[in-house]
Length: 92
Image (cartoon, rainbow, N blue to C red; front, top):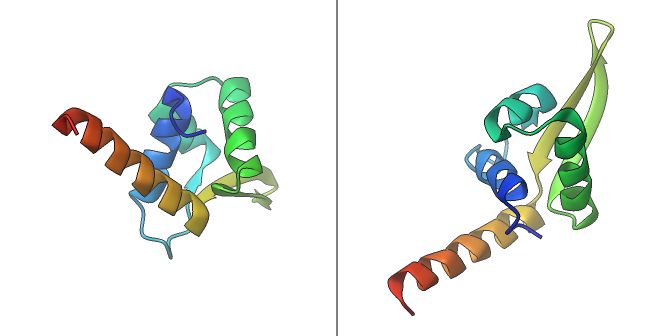
């Protein structure tokens, strides 16, 4: 699930935050990934279905705001994926 480039960028950005932080809003993730609204939304749906992210929708000052946070399961999966990539690079 994580190997796809946009999802990899999303998980990297989210896991860079401390687990107790709120997460990142959709607009920030869109900027970080370079994805379009629809493309990012589809990738977030994939990550949410896998249980890797928690998506919260709310209204702030009467405007919709979507916040995304890495779940504990997602953090563990990302750590395993990074370890796997490091092993490939090391030639293991």
